[in-house]
Structure formats: C-alpha cells, structure tokens
Image (cartoon, rainbow, N blue to C red; front, side, top):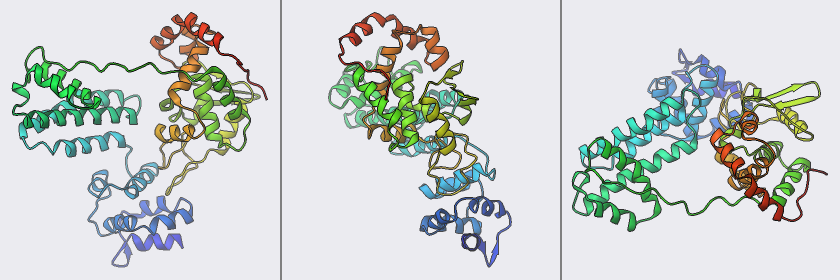
Length: 395
C-alpha cells in the first residue's frame, strides 16, 4: 500500500517520471506506517508533485528553492543517506541562506554588502576551514547569527540617530551599548573587523562583555546521587542514562556526546572501551553494560528512510544525522542534569585525581582546560572536602 501511494505521488501523467526510481527506492526502505503518515501531509505531497512534474530538479538547489519545512529536511536527509544526493553540511548551507535574508532588511546597498562581506570573510571562511574536521555545530551557527543580527541592528540604530558607520564616534558606540540589552555586545566582532578594514575610524571599539559569574558546579553529593540513579534506574531511556553519565563522570560536553559514532565504543570479550580522546577509556561496571545495551538498542526518530545503518551512537530525527546537542540537553534537564554545572563538578573531581596529560589523552579535554583545572586542584579539593555526605557509586 505504501509502495503504491508513493508511486502515485511520484507519477506524472500516469507514469513514474524517469530519474525518480532512486527516490522511490529510498522512501520505501523505511517503515511503511511512518511513510504513510509522512505522505499524508500536504507539504510532503507538494514536494513529491514538484519532483514528478519537473518543477523541482532532483538537486540540493532544487530542494532549497522550496519553502523550508521539516518535510523538505526529512526528504533531503533520506536522499543523502540513500546516495541519491551528495552529502553536504546542511547547517552551513542553511546559515548561508539565512545571512542573505537577515541582511536584506538593510536598505542601503553599501551597508548590506558590507555585512555580507563580514559574514563571508570573517565567519563563513572560518567555518569552512573548521568544517574539514567536523560539521558546523548548532552553537557555532547560533554565534554567527547573533553576530550578524547585532551588526544589522547597529547599522539601523546609527541611521536612526542621524549618522552612519563611517562617521560614527566613540560616544555613539557607548550609547549603543548603554541603551540596550547585553546582546548589543555581539556587534563587537563586526566593529573590530570594520576597524581592521578601515571602514570606521581608528580607536573605535566595543568592549568585551564582562562575564557575570563563573559556572557554579553541581554539588558533589548531588552529582553522585544523579549518577547512581542513571546507573540503576531502568525506567530511564538508555540513551539518556549513558549520555548523562558521560557528562557527570567524564565531563563531556553535549556537542561531543551527541556526535559520538558507534565506532567510539569497542567491545573485546568482557571489556568495553570508549574513545573520547587519543587513548581508549576502559569503562567500569555498570557503565560498560549500558554502553553495550545502547549499541544493541539505539533508536532514532526518523520519519522516512532507513535507520539500521546510522553511524551515530545517538541517531537523530533525520536519516544519517545524529541527535542534536540541544535536544539531548533538553532531555537531560528533565532528569535534573544540567550540562555546564555537571561538567564543572566532574572536572573538579577529576582534576584532583589525574594529571592534565591524562585528562587530555583519555577524555579529549583540551590541554589548556585540563591544565587550568589541575592547577586549581588544591582549591577544588578544599571545596570538595567541605561538601558533606559524599557518596560513592554503589547500589
């Protein structure tokens, strides 16, 4: 039934359009019930009709031209996973399109092009370089958007106050910062880039935003209580248990946890290892059992396309993609686990027991971060000693 519905959707004048057989093959590979639910959505039918009548070429650019929605994203991911379309960094491509739209509000052509050059040469060039090793993260994309929004807002504000970038003064920038929210500090990178490229006068700058406070670590007794619950509470999803323990015991950021490939877990006889840094980390009981269970039971939330060959330890909603760190963080917060405080608490404990080089080799923590924490070991040890009721991992 799923097959026939799909053939009908991809047919033009009663016949399956040439070149769409691979699309048909990819879409029937998933679960039939999920596929029928997806096909029932008007947006999905619109996309398939556009492919069938030729108004949408079977390319990334063709899909980009359609109104952005989840159906387009689901279909694209399935086609990439099935080899019908080449892989590309979707977050990067989306960011490029967003920059064009976000800067369109600037009515002055010179200012519009200036912000786009800033985005291209300051942000996108760096992301392209870093993308050789890993895809763009949601955190990186969010930072770029915040920077571009602030740059656009600054130019609009200057126009409203009777000046423009080339003639603004220090007092204008001071008033810009003082009269708005802290998000205005995000224009700092744009102003610095403009100064280096002589678009504004020398000496003009926006100061860096002061950090309001350091992250307060999760209390040590609370961290161990949360860890014991994750170890032994079978009512919690296996994905959340394992991810939470990586945060609370091994100080792993969610951006790393969410992108762990299945190859990061190695099972050799009774021993299970996890690769976080340069050297494998031997997992103790019962964490080793949880890792093996996760390998055997990992599930995604894919709407269309096959899931069995996903390379990720935490499969996401789109075929071939991992669970987002944002979604993973939301799930852990429901359990009372907050990533940054939890990581800080774990680092506090680990840095009093292991040298910086070992933290880097086993946990993949940067040498700078590892050294900073171990140098503060005495301070953290005194802090930990004052926390009463410290518990150990036990049933």
